[in-house]
Image (cartoon, rainbow, N blue to C red; front, side, top):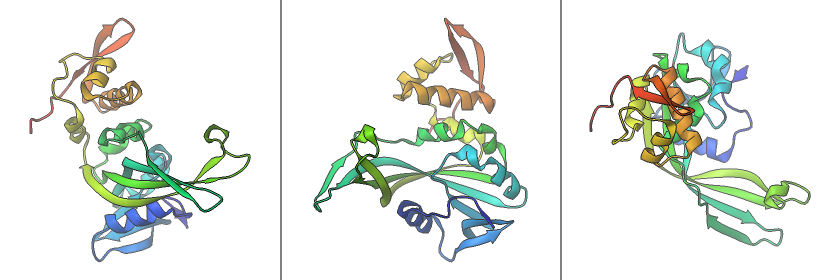
Length: 229
């Protein structure tokens, strides 16, 4: 029997799975040749800690007959915990802070997935801890510190997206009527790469259209304006 996620379940995955499933859910249930994290009243719930695009084939097998909710954890706050060989534990807060818009980075490999009426994506903004241990000869960029796992501290916020138009809630107010990805990055305070991924997803889902160029950059215009409030 195949799995949607990973048989080598991490602590973060296990914790978030339990918190994402409603009371009375069944866990590790075989459905259509796959093992899913939880089933609640016919809804398949899966915590996805890997690339969303890698699931296209598996989702194609399940979505025709089942409703699926994919929970995508994003670390809004992350603590880096180093476990030294002498037993000391050193902890500091990561300068990186994830946002709901990170959904676009996951969706960019398969934006059309959100068009399926049986699929719902849930972004779970979390506080977590990344554990590292010193292993000689490994991870030279981290000077031998290897990530050994992540664990959940708490869920800060959940946002659900059940249709392409739900993504318009992530379009920042004040965005020009015609904009480049540089405009989107500046207005939403996003890294340029993430703004490019957002624009691509909006374009592929027909929520934005390309209306020209500003130098080498595409000019976009929203096909639908986000609803205020």
